[in-house]
Image 1 (spheres, rainbow, N blue to C red):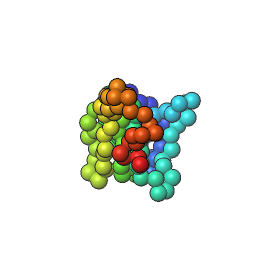
Image 2 (cartoon, rainbow, N blue to C red; image 1 turned 90 degrees about the vertical axis):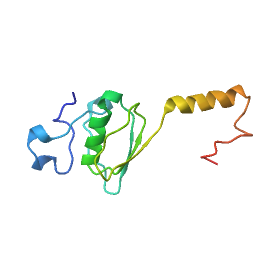
Image 3 (cartoon, rainbow, N blue to C red; image 1 turned 45 degrees about the vertical axis):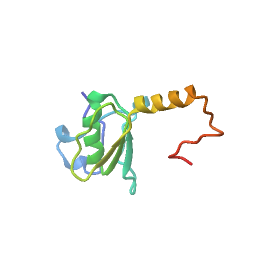
Length: 112
């Protein structure tokens, strides 16, 4: 369970304390709402926390989530999600290495 007293959105003070979202960042710092213009977040949390954190991100104005959690996210309408399966990415890299491909001759087709 995430401590609801620590996550603050701009409208958090207008809601009852039991309706506020919460979590802690590394080092014990409470997160803040993103600065104006920030609409995308990367989500890398355990699967059992992913939906809750994604909902909280949406609640502070995030409109796009790059999901590294090993689950399919349930998000509010208007929030886009792209999921990244690290297992598949590691398999692709291992395959390239097994073929003896090095970075000088073969580049990631997505990052040329």
